Image (cartoon, rainbow, N blue to C red; front, side, top):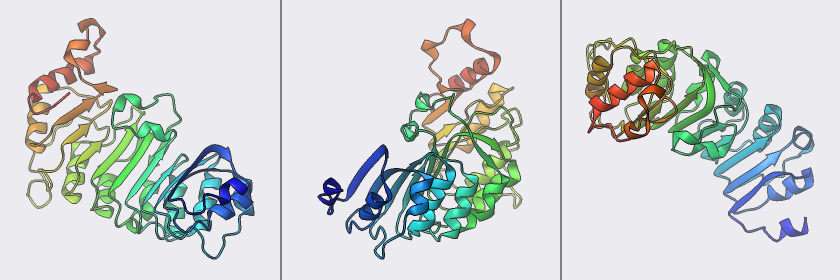
Length: 304
């Protein structure tokens, strides 16, 4: 406690991996200039935590590591913060959206990361741990998304996605300011198609980076929007990751992606960037061979 009291004026504080007692958390909550906080919490300590009158007055960036989703949710509920713009948590997502909506924190959020290990949020896809438990992303998470009106970045990794094209349309309409959407999926079920992707880029015209699994065997006619117009936002999306998407026609797919994303500079699939020189022919499965051909056809548009 004596050491913590000397940090009264800090703007950034990181205490990860050590669970502080309630009295220490209560002291940290009064730090008047604290903007960036990274903290590990337990359910018991959060149950005993009584928020002070000046409860985290300046917090803008928050990272919570917790043993249970209830511990994370309790901290968010007791903070009742309308000031933080960025949140990173290491627990499941479905109740998280409901809690953020209930504690009036959703509207202020611009960045939301859900990741088993925050270090996984590196832009390099090879750093994601395939063995990590997958967060469930299904239609239930859409119930409160309208509250996240200013959200620009949504990243969930690793996750098991159970959304279809209509769900993607609802998500896109709820989050029109998205610049980055990352669903780092581990599952092999592919209910989403490129039609859902077109919904995303139409209703999220600022989208610059997208990571999503789709059924790439289904290639729609490019201008099949309900009003007959091309999808909006074509000149913004530069980074596309299709993960383990199944594919059947490399030529048609490359043509479709070239038309849909004319400023595409980074294209990833499977587990890592497609590097032609590093892959032996005998090591490539059928999908990888086809994706390699897509990559060759996309050059020099794509960068690996």
